[in-house]
Amino acid sequence: MRLPHPSARIVAAIVCVLLMPILMGAKRPPGLGDVKDVRSWSYDDYTRVVVELTRPVETEVKRLKADAKSGRPDRLYLDLSGIWVGKDFENGIPIQDGLLKTLRLGQNTLTKSRLVIDLQRYERHRMLVLRSPHRIVVDVYGPRTGEAAVLPEGSNGTKPNSRLSIPLRRIQTVVIDPGHGGKDPGAIGVGGLREKDVNLRLAKMLGTRLEALGFEVVFTRKSDKTLSLEERTVTAEAARGDIFVSVHANASTRKATRGIEIYSLDENHERHSLDVAARENGVRRSEVDSLQRAMAKLHVHEASEHSVRLANAVHDSLMPGLRKNYSGVPDLGVKKGPFYVLFLSSMPAILLESGFLTNKHDARLLRSKAYLEAMADHVATGLGDYRRQGDQLFSSRSAQ
Ligand SMILES: [Zn+2]
Image (cartoon, rainbow, N blue to C red; front, side, top):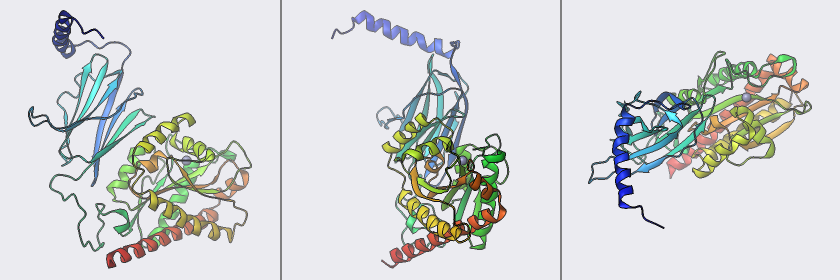
């Protein structure tokens, strides 16, 4: 390899120096996308940063550790190729939540923007690229400044504390997430039956049943409105939910397909799960891959084991209960699949597919109030069973 001639280095240095003022007052090259919005949410264990863009980008998060000599603070950064931000965010966005200091977003080159996340504390991070609208989600985890990094000892479990690991937490609050809504109707079934309406109806009935069992219930939506995935999980996290239940209804190109499925989150999947995940994620089948890759790189979900237990508890109550009065409903079992909404929530989470809107028998049942009420009843009983199992785990651990 030939080293560049010294004059080439000088030229490069001059170009660099020249580039700075050019960039500062730079004219925007044609054909670039924009940053539409930058949002952040601070939770107990992590801060979520979302950058909304007008076009998709491929990127990765890099870390620059603090350097005492130069006084450089600890930071994460990621480059957004083909994105113009100009000077819109040149003053930075202060966060100061004990985990992140500031977000800075600037034009790094004429055709590339850079997001810098200045850190106060850091343990790990994860990133997810979503679409409709295009956005990048970065979750930064760590103990906040001034807080103990270890779990509090001898907690009696009477107050919700999401710093406690999941099995040590008394289950009180259920977040019910009726899938789709507003501009997104979800699947459309026999006779024009819309998934978003069925989901909301069933979700509300489930809420009533759960309250009767002494749970606190929080809904991600209670009306026909459009919600992003982050908005759904923002509600869940803000409410310090212990369980997340996403309520959906299925569709298939095979009209004969019917039955009930319950999903927990997993990077692995069966063939059919991939179709369901693509539809529920609102992406093409091929795009589910990127989520699976993201999940495979991270430790799968702290809550994963509990999500499987949760899915089984609901399944074991729902199917036999329902079949007492509706003997023909097929049990399609407990499955695993890569679902964004489950991935983005930090609590044990399941996704219920209440039946196939595209099947005439299922569609008839899903229109029936009595059927939905029976379903809500047995799902609620299943969640009650899960809470009891948790209580037993809790008391056996406390006794140790
Ligand atoms: Zn759905």
